[in-house]
Image (tube, rainbow, N blue to C red; front, side, top):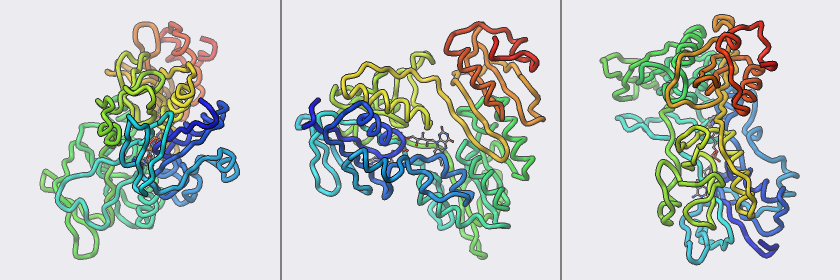
Length: 406
Ligand SMILES: Cc1cc2nc3c(=O)[nH]c(=O)nc-3n(C[C@H](O)[C@H](O)[C@H](O)COP(=O)(O)OP(=O)(O)OC[C@H]3O[C@@H](n4cnc5c(N)ncnc54)[C@H](O)[C@@H]3O)c2cc1C
């Protein structure tokens, strides 16, 4: 592509920002338009449920680029503009400001949005979600000492909100419909640990709890009615029941969409001029042995880098070894790998000590790892997984054995 060319990126989150940065890093000197519908510069989300919600940082910590680095990228980017349709024949993107943006290559990084709860009272004032900067700031205002927070959904976002709220002196109850926390992405042993961690910090965790409705209370608060007839009073409710990929733009343009926008290991969609990256993609996952849609910061970044290089004709490939982290209270929790089924764990260290790792083996190799306050174990395990090194469970379980030397 030439300096007269144009690349349009839709979505100014982690994936969109990294796609733009990579295009320039790879020497692309043509025009880049970054279309993002949120009223902020390109930004990431992890601090929103942690430092920003806690009040120890302001939202600008989420910005992907300092202002001079952003200027140096020389992007056309006016926050708050939405792409409304793609004309694949004419190779243009139409926006809600009536602009028609021509492209040689288009990168879709439209991410995901929260799944809304459909029950009576779900739209009452005092009911929040946690996805955007505005969400985090609105919820933060309600997290004052002595307030009561009801968290609906015991997944990662709900649990981080619970931990942050406890730090701010808020009384917290977590409702989870399944029989364990983070059931979709965590191993049973990790779920148990999380339940103990939160209980130890004074959170009331209710499993197999169905929420039927919310209603306003005379004191200005909210009353939640559970399926078993229990009523719970709260000052605020935060709902974290999953996300939905923003596939509509791609679907309406006739691109192949299944669990997300279908891409190959270069981020290429069913149209050779259109690429996609991040939460919105349904990708091959060769290492995992199945197609996956990953909802993680690292995947958004790595896949965007590959997609941007591929858009310029490069040959990089993305075969994710899923990595995810969460910070709750004093625990830094990291997970590597994503088995379809969790085999029995090999434990290293004592969960009661607050520092331990759980290894999950497939044959003689490590398939996945959970580490709590044990980043060294994670680094060693990553190498063992990437190099397909056979290991012995007894060595992993023995804290005297140096994992780096295995
Ligand atoms: C509160 C919170 C905490 C998190 N913490 C962690 C963590 O600790 N670790 C971790 O690994 N992951 C974490 N995640 C997940 C991680 O943030 C996501 O996986 C990541 O944001 C995905 O990046 P993305 O660019 O694909 O999508 P997004 O961040 O969703 O960005 C997509 C952007 O595109 C915009 N957009 C969509 N459609 C259009 C359109 N038509 N026109 C213009 N713009 C459009 C969206 O509004 C959005 O701004 C967290 C997520 C949240 C919400």
